[in-house]
Image 1: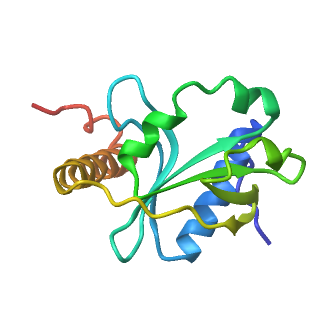
Image 2: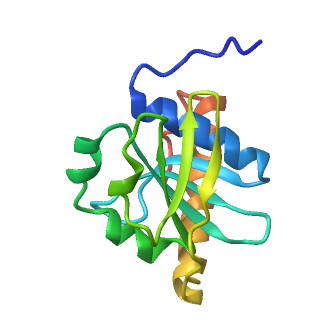
Length: 151
């Protein structure tokens, strides 16, 4: 039985299911990551083979059509996916991107995203930034009062 609390917002429920799917595929997963000022991806992961995936979670048509930044995320991933729930109109999503169907409990890759390898310098910086972000979040969980005392 899964008794972990469910996120209240549909996009966060989808992100939780996507994260569970990615972990089952042996990815290290981070949500709400900022690759550069002005951009925030819903879910980013690093696969065991080093591929970096970005997954944008969309809960409805308006959520998708109002997204003006998603093409900027292509510069920060080897593979780009949309994650949507069962009621989402898949036909409005660009066919040259990946597709994941998810709910709060898991997900399934319906369409693999094409592989577009990151440049080496960008991969190095992004991997460093992911590691720092994950380590800082872990430190905050372990010591909320002391975690903000950086130099």
